[in-house]
Length: 336
Image 1: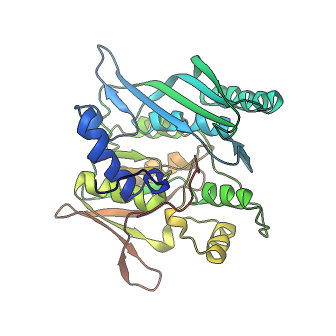
Image 2 (image 1 turned 60 degrees about the horizontal axis):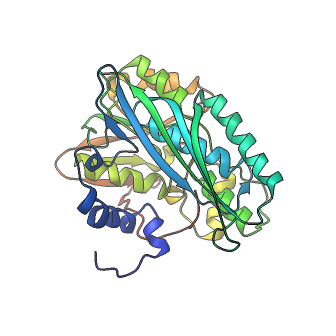
C-alpha cells in the first residue's frame, strides 16, 4: 500500500478499502477463515456450521428517516450473518458514548435496538459500555457482533458464482445513501427518502427452503450494488452482465441523484441483498422472495455470462454496453 496515512476513502467499501484490507489486515491476520473475505467467518462445528460477524456503526446523523444508529446496528449484523446463509441467533452490543450525551436519546436508540432484535428473532446476550470525554466521540458509536448457525449442506461464498447464475435483488437501490445525505445536509427534496434499513434473515431462510444451491448472497452496503458485484466478480473470476432497465430504483432517489450528481448504483443500502442462483431455480426463488416483507419488489437484474475473465458490464437502456467499475473513493463518509 503506497498511502502513508488513513483517509476517509479507506472506509468507502471500494477499491481503496479493498486494498487496505488485503495489504495490511490480511498481511498479518491471514488464515483460512479470514481470507474468504465473506460478510462473516464460517467456522466448523460438530453439528451445524457457525457464522460469526462483527461491525461498528458511526453513522451521522444518529437519527434519519426510516431508522437510527441503533436499528441500523442490529440489522447490519443480522444481515451479515444471513449473507453467510446463517440463521442469526445471538448478538453482542458495545456502546462508546460521549460525555454529555442525552440519556433520553440513548434510551430511544436502545429501545429501537430491542424492537429490531425481536423482529429479527435474535437475542442480545452480552455487551459493554465505555464513556469518553466530550469531543472524543461524535455522540455515540456502536459495535455489534453476532453468531448464527448454517446447515451443513449450505455453501455460500463470493467465490461460488458460476456461469448461468441469475442475479436477483430484493428491491430498489440507493435509498439509504440518499436518506442519510438529505438529512445530513438538510436538503429540501420534493419527497422524503426513507432509509431501507431492515433485517433480511427471513428472506434467506425462505429461499434456502427452495434450494440449498444458492451460490452467493451479499448485501450491497458501502460502495453499493456496483462495487459489491465487482467484488463477487473478482472473487469468482466471472463476467457479470446487468440490465440497466431491470435495476429497481425509486423515482425520488433517481431524481435526487440527478440533482446532486450521484450514481444510485454506488450508493449504500442497508436492507438490500444480491442473490446468485442457478437459472433453473431462479423463478421459484424470485417468487418466494416477493412473498416476504422486505422482498416484494424483488427483480432479476442480470446473469453470469462467462468464467473466462472477471468484470461487470451494464447493458444500457439504449442497447449499448459499458464497464461498471468499483467505487474508487468515498462518496458519503459515516454512512453506517
